[in-house]
Image (cartoon, rainbow, N blue to C red; front, side, top):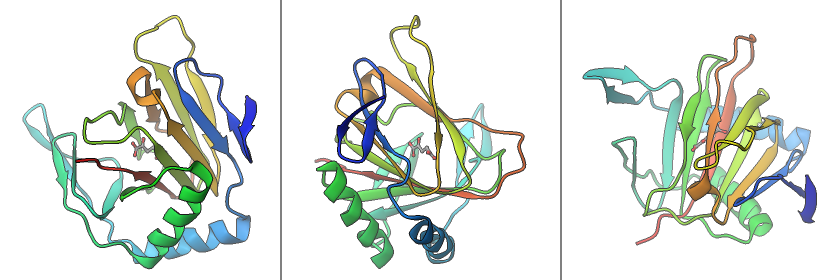
Length: 197
Ligand SMILES: O=C(O)CCC(=O)C(=O)O
């Protein structure tokens, strides 16, 4: 990993710009944000239709911001910003140099909650995504979409960390948060995004 954004290490990934700061938030701040987000966010259990069946997503979600968003055929109506989300948005914008108008929140209740391989490459999304983690450490992986010869890049997302995915990352790489059989505490993830148009 190289260091060329202050406080961040750049992951060694061709055709991508991914930066990671494991301790972007202090432990005290992270504990407080975890507790407050658990309480203050309107978590929902969404379902998607797959193979003709209604299936519950393996995580709880919430969508806040200025604009609605559709992914996996699921329309997320925006809820108005909460003060805590605006506070986090400002912190992240100052570090990334990007501006965001929406945030998707994921609540992983245990190790069997997860997110499968995907890219956030919808035409309505700007390329810069900032991803905060609070709570249990979880494995995270990137896999090149075109070049099968490249190895999967793995990292552990820590409590209070910030991961920036910028540039052409989404065009060339998929990412996932796999399940784990380890008994672990809940984790909250926030991905700040910019919906264009
Ligand atoms: O929970 C995570 O870190 C993954 C979130 C993610 O991939 C997404 O929201 O697109």
